[in-house]
Image (cartoon, rainbow, N blue to C red; front, side):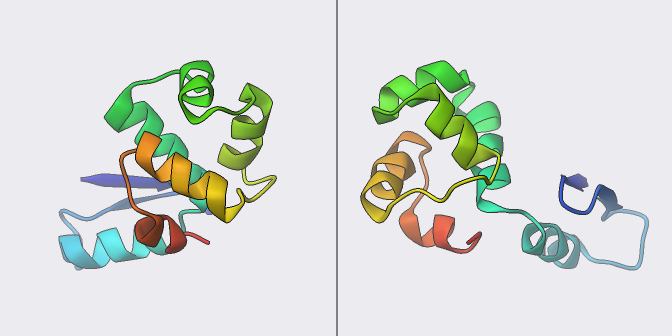
Amino acid sequence: MWFYTKTSDSIYQSKGTSMTDKEAMKLALEKVTLGEYLRGLRLCQTDMSLEKMAKKIGCAKSYLSDVENDKIMPTLSKAAIMSKAYKTSLNQMGKYI
């Protein structure tokens, strides 16, 4: 299992090292930003384009791009709408702030 994080530009391999899968996952998740988390969900779970996700959320494509690129943070009300569209919870999203 491989984990990649944009912020560290590092790849962690959990198998074949002294780290357990749980330790590798925790290390990788600690370095993930909210935008990276949301982009990953959009691409891996929903397989939706940025434009389609923006329409589903009811925001501009540029706004969603800024959120996914960590240029801006969504308001709480927008985050609530986003959590449903991204099939996650506000609690889970809060872990990446």
